[in-house]
Image (cartoon, rainbow, N blue to C red; front, side, top):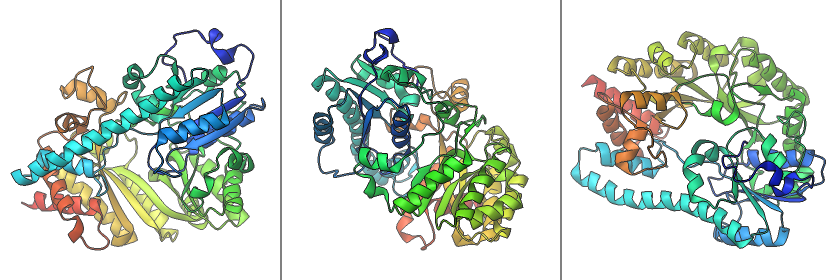
Length: 495
């Protein structure tokens, strides 16, 4: 993580003079309750450094949320007395046309609902949601700045996925002494700590006995899904994707025995039964097949009773790997086809053939898979037409013919224009955005530009989404928002 701000050279920073930092508090800022895989791996790597540095992990996404985050943070600092507090900021900007995302629903109602009454109601609700969104960002900034002011003898660092994407916009809001690390390279951060970065840093070396001491809230995640990473980095150049920026374009694969040892420890020591293989995507390139097959084969050999899920590039799937996926406990598979039109898939730079993707899904079906298939679709991608939308509906129907209607879940999303992506470059070229725009704004008239939903189909797709949101309570038991949106688009196409 290279520092964005370099007010003083590393040689003058407190922990770069040969004295390693003796106590580090890692703080995950408030977010949805998802297992803190990144902070766990960071704490484990610090433990691997061999310097005897004590680490504590405060996860503000778990624990008693009725206690103000500031009180919890300050109490932890006062009791643990760290030399450095390292904040991890997981996410900021989410555009999700799901029933649970009221802010997105109201933004679309404000923009596309034909009823003036519904639009007015959405605008009133939207003011509260904009306020809550801005308040959440301000609260995190206030936590970091407050710790820096209240404990002037403690070093403060900030990193995490949100900072790698939006750090340029957050930096001016923070005290200058907060060191911001915005890249995936851990070398400068460990130099800041005065520690040697362990060799092969892709291997966190998770020791659950140490994690239990560092992370007292770990029991809250025993019955939830635990994230385990098998590799970092993705060489693909998908138009909208941030993972190459977050993790780098060159894959670093973990040793299969180390991955399985971590999974086994969670399963046997904590009783965990559900795992998410938290790679940017499984099978990023064909060479990943051998790596994944060895990991899953070891799980089968150990006789571990578990279920796992992951985001898979199904175009590279072959019968042998499909079989071992099913035997090792595959319980949910997320597959991104982007569109049912090869022309749109190519425009998105996804780099696969839809025919190959369908053959991969046929392999999974033939292997006896009985779990759910989540099919990701990007609505109104560049070059979308009524014909390509119809091809996407047909592709979903074809997948349902393989697995059954109730087991196929369309996950509809809009392309969010985010910094450093090819989609941002396209938005500049099309005049949708100008350099210097604020990517953190969610005022509806600005969010409309950050969500790639251009004419001539934008209004029609927007109306279909609004209709689907209104019909949520009336949907049949198996129908989710993706089903309802696609059904509404189908009706629009038939008019």
